[in-house]
Image (spheres, rainbow, N blue to C red):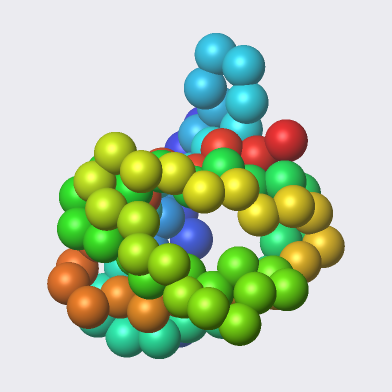
Length: 93
């Protein structure tokens, strides 16, 4: 069954589903800055647009574009800057 999630007053919207092997969400982020925390290991893939990310323990920011992915371990906090509306796929382990 699909479940819709809304975060940051609707600026981030995702749909949760089960892939063949892992739970996942696919969603869209509006332009803005966001802080997320993880409860599981997350692999984020940029589907369209770009995410500028400050990964846990890093002072620098890195931009990931269409087709790029990054991993955030469980129980971490990370920051995102979104300069164009961006679609993503996130799988959880």
